[in-house]
Amino acid sequence: MFSIDVFASMFIVFLGLLVLTVIIFYIRDVTQTKHAIRRNYPVIGRFRYFFERQGEFFRQYFFAQDREEMPFNRAERSWVYRAAKDVERTAAFGSTQSLEVTGTVMFMNCAFPTLDEEALDPSNVTLGPYCKKPYTTNSLFNVSGMSFGALSKPAVRALSKGAKLAGCWMNTGEGGLSPYHLEGGADLVFQIGTAKYGVRDEHGNLSTEKLKEVAAHEQVKMFELKMSQGAKPGKGGMLPGRKVNAEIANIRGIPEGQDSISPNGHPEIKNPGDILDMIAMVRNATGKPTGFKAVIGAYGWLETLFAEINHRGIESAPDFITIDSADGGTGAAPQPLMDSVGLPLRESLPLVVSMLKKHGLRDRIKIIASGKLIVPSKVAWALALGADFVVSARGHMFALGCIQAMQCNKDTCPTGITTHNERLQRGLNVADKAQRVANYNKYVHYGAGLIAHSCGVSSARELKGEHVRIVQESGLSEPLDKMYENYK
Image (cartoon, rainbow, N blue to C red; front, side, top):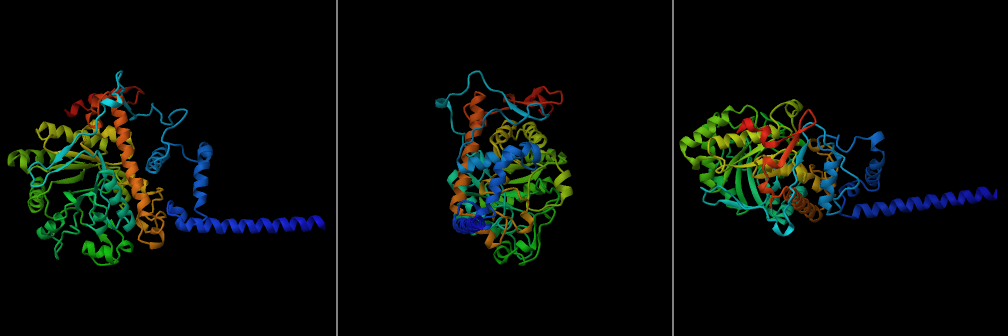
């Protein structure tokens, strides 16, 4: 009987300690601001970090390998998380990336690498030399288009503040200009989608007066005409009605609670000449650099466009072209389009660059590359292929704390990034996440520079095709410039 009493007493004490521990964890989780999952899901959310840690030891038996997950694998996400948190980014014992897989990118180190004292910051690039207000920046890596609506209020605020800290630009996405884009003080690129949200008149047409109102904000540096997007070429933006609250409806100029579905294309644009006409209209109204964004599929129209530019005069050219890869991301898209339509960046980027050279327009039109470029090696690869700038949406979402839950279109994002549920938004601390965005951006620049210096050039913008080799089906590699020599 004595033993039973002792064990019963010990069990009660243990149970009491367990309850007390849970209460302490609960209070700590709901009051801390560093981890959105723990704040939104107190106590239970801690298991995520436990299983994430155990995955390092058991993944070969139960989980996907480092390089297997889609759309972004564990190795890529982990690097972004570490960079954003400004913690150890080195690895031990060897790479988990196979160098035998077809398509693997390998940079060619130089026998005489660039010394630290010889390294240079990326050079300045000017967009819109024929505009009243050209835009000059040295930022290689920038925040791609994500609208207020697709993203939550605190997410937009954190990105805006983070972009300002990083010294890069932020694209507004097609949902219009919100106060939260302006709040952080970052340079902004205003995106004009097919529905003209934020710059439309009562009939849904592009309004010159509203363009001027947007351009009056000094932070708005450029305008981007969105022709198509990599994840849904041939389909306009899609924002489910459950995410269209009163504030978003007011900014976009649409009814509250109804699905926000943009037209498949711009009704005013039926041919390449119409693109130049609209770009001229926007640029004349705003005085600022104007270009367009498109995922490249059929490309004969580009030949016509570039020939028309040379016919009209060099000043008629778009100031930039944003090339989106067919494997780009989005908050909502039909899966057939997401899976099977458009060219990936490895094919479309060199194609467009070579066509610009052919028509003598390479210096006039700057190239912005987009599509799964979230780590330094992929940014450096895009620069070597001919991009002047790289933009990323999902990389910066990971920096905010995205866990690839793939709930963007359901208004149930557990980290508060793509939901308008205030309870879930509570976990996203703006000040902390803004610093993480800035850290991530800094280390992408640093990593791309690290690769460039290993290749013997002073900055990442000096990388060329000769510095890269790509593994072929034979298991042997070929120089990047040789692979694309037919494009020259």
